[in-house]
Structure formats: C-alpha cells, structure tokens
Length: 313
Length: 104
Image (cartoon, rainbow over all chains, first blue to last red; front, side):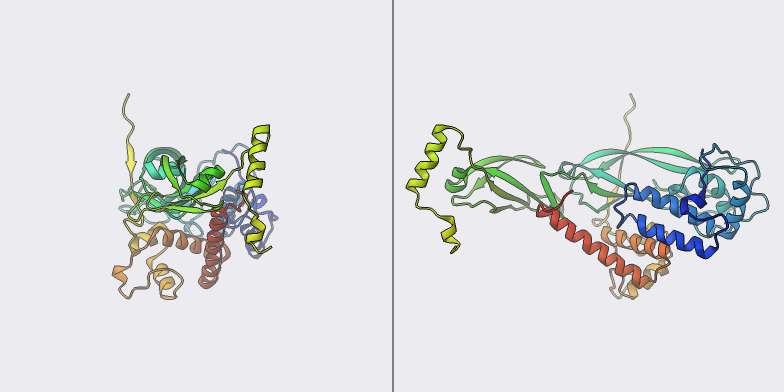
C-alpha cells in the first residue's frame, strides 16, 4: 500500500486553512465532476479528491493524518503503525460508511476502523450500505439477455478491527429488455452489515457499448440500411442485420434516400417494446466500366429527370 | 467443474423503489428525499407518501443531486438546477447521436 499525500492531491500547502482546503476542493470538483468533465479518468480523480477532502476537512482526521505524514512521503510503501490512532476519537463525520467501498485501501485502513468504532458498542447492529456500479453491455444483450462477471472491492473488518479490501467477483444475469440508464438491484450484494446486520443491496446501472451501426433512444433503435437505386425505386424485400439478428425488410417502391421505415415492436423488448427505425441510404453503383457508364447515359437520355427542378431551383 | 452461480436481480422500473429504498440507495435520510419532493425538485409528488414509488431515472437524479449538494455545499435548488441542465444535455446528446451527428 502506498502512502497518499492528500495535500498534494488537493494542491494545497500543509499549512492551508480550512477555507483554502474548501476552495481548492471546489475548484477541482468543478474540473473533474464526472457529469461534466471531459478529462480522462475524471471519475478516479474525483474519488481521490473526495477522499483527500474527507480527511483534510475533518479537524480530527487531519490532525491524526498530519502526525503520520511527518514520517512518510507520497508513494512510499506504507503500513499503518500499530495504535497509530491512539488518542484520537473519530466521529465519522465527513464520510459515510458507503465511502469505504469507494475510497482507497489507504483511507479504509486509517479511518475505516475509527469510523466504525465511533458508532457504538456491543450489540450494535446496522444494515450494510447499498453500493453502485456501472455495467457496460452490448445492445444485442438487451435483446437476448446476457450474463456479466463484475469485480468489486469490498471493505472487510478483520478480528483485530483493521479494514482490508477484498475482491468480490459476481456473475450477474442481465435480463432481456434492459434500457440504458436502467438499474438492476441485487439484494444482499452490497456492503456487509455490521454486528450481524443484513448486507446492503448492489445497484448496477446499465450502459451500452457505443456501436456506430445502431443508435438507441429509450427502447427505440435506429439504424441505416444501404439500398441500390433500383431497390429504392422499384421496391424490394431485403435482408439486413439488426441487433436481434438478420431480418427481412420490405422497401416500398418509390422510396427516396433518407426514408425511414418503422418496424413496430422490433426495438428493445419489454413491457412496452421499442420500435426499430430503418433509414434507407441509397448507394449509387460506380460508373467505372463501359457497361456501367452506358447504363447511366441511357438513364440520362431516357428519363427526363432533373431533381433541382422539383425543388423549384 | 462446479457451475458458477449467476445472480439474478430485479429490474428497477418493473419493480419501483419505495421512499426508504431510494433514501438508502443514495445514503441519505428519508427526510432529505421528502424535502426535495415537497419542493418539487424530485419526482413523485402524489399526495400519499406511503404510495410514493421511484424509477431508475429518479434514482440517478437523486444521487446526482445529492453528490452536487455535497461536493459544492450547494443549495438543493441549485443542485436540482444543475441536474436539470445535465439531464437536458444528455437528452440532446442522445438526439445528436440518434441523428448521426455526434463524434462518439
């Protein structure tokens, strides 16, 4: 485990006042907030920043950390000395139990035990916190259902009261019909309870892998299908791949490029299944042989067709 | 070889969350949720608290508001306003993507 320099994370001096720490935190939170930030690894940076703030904005934790920090440099290998926190009573303010799962091992080792012991004595029972994770699936998985293996860090308190994080690997069934942004709740798979209390739940938020072939809005799926000029003009029954497999689509005669065909109920399945929208893209065959050129020239001669005239241009 | 156990969960929306469940999932007290619903910042708003039910979207919204309030010590109204704008931005991005006008 590496020693973390929380002052360095927030970019403040060791002598920074509470107000300076708050200001530095807000500035970084603005920069790395996962909802708006375009910075790489914004989520991870935000976690570090939150962790640094949880320690430095709490006078008790900051004092204990400062004493410890005198002997370590950032990145140096670190094991908390026994009874390093003797004389400090952490009230648990500034971070929630849930944060233990989201913060680093370094934080959990230093403050996890204090946060817990501060909450009460023998016979104390509490339900474990709910936890959240994102799961990325392919669009086809929403049509057919799938299973995914996810790995989570779970904080655990050992017999000596120290906090360790343990990897928890879980296979999860992704039900058919799931939408982007929807949650799956797995009862009892969140943080373990305290003092024999029940475990919390795990919420998985579903996201789709970006796929340039398909665009998804709710349960509706949009895709483009290339067609030949004669298929568009004369009508045809064509085969096209979709997220649920290859299907037959009837192209009506007289279709223009950009025409959208709605296949009702062929979007993501569910209580109210979505629709599949197929947009026709008319692709011209290249005029790269004598025969092809001749066919185009025949059309030019025989068809009195001027698309600009129709526009009134 | 032992068969690996595959956990099955409930899909939120088909099973909606109660007030207690939403509060717990956001690590807040139920009062936090009630205050924001009564101020019109969060969904539901039907007159009977016991019948309140919340969707996946409410959960995402509540967690986002809670995070903004905590990170910036923002007033609930300001956090809700920022959340409205983030949601609007997401909707517009989705539409751009659906129209094939997005880079990603």
